[in-house]
Image (cartoon, rainbow, N blue to C red; front, side, top):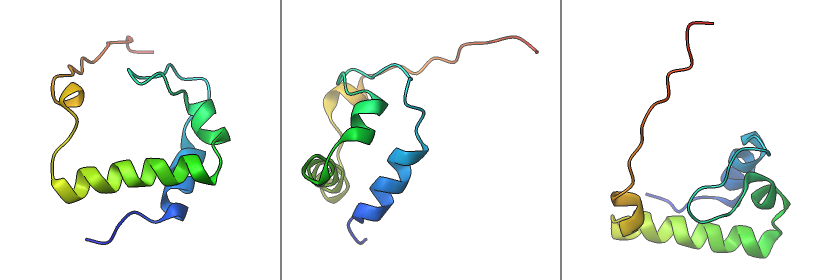
Length: 73
């Protein structure tokens, strides 16, 4: 598989809603959107490393996703 392309990351970051709560890393969507090319290069290195090693960070493996019911409106 080819590494992620910088334009793929930029497109994905643009689609995120800026005022959502940050995850455990504390990095908000607004901060990701404001990140310069150096920041985005580090993010690409991180995700490419996960894909190449076929592992993920331990904190992510232990995380629990739980749906929140918001009603029928």
